[in-house]
Amino acid sequence: DERAEILAEASALKKLATDYMHPEVGVTATDGAAFGRNYFNRASAPETEDTDEAEERALVLAEAAALKKSAVDYMHPEVGVTTTDATVFGRNYFNRPSAPETEEDEFADERAEIL
Image (cartoon, rainbow, N blue to C red; front, side):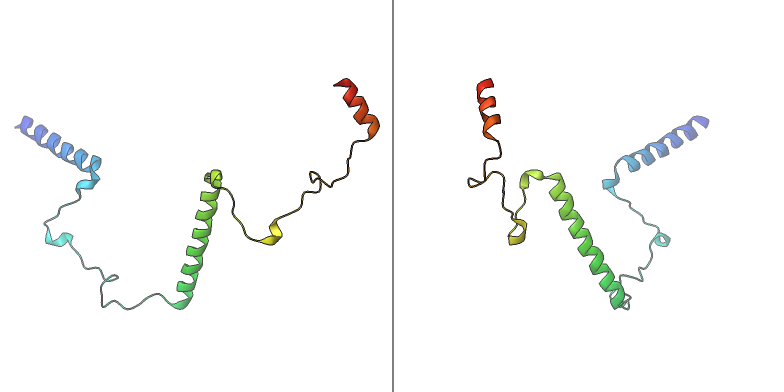
């Protein structure tokens, strides 16, 4: 009597543990009271989103896409930066061939003697 109750409780606990550890199995219900009607996604449901909400949703999605692009750029620096904007290119005034020599002759001679 008591042993049967303990085994039934252990069996119920095992079923609960299996359901918890394997969510891919899904839930099966045969009770008619467990089912309900979805009043929001049915075909005859009235449209509830107005223009302001649609514009806000579009802005949020655009911002999320920009944040995703920034995150990908940050996490993958090996991809590099590609740009075609002419204003982002600069001229290197220090290492160009026509740059004037910045080291004076005295220091150059002294450095050459040391080396």
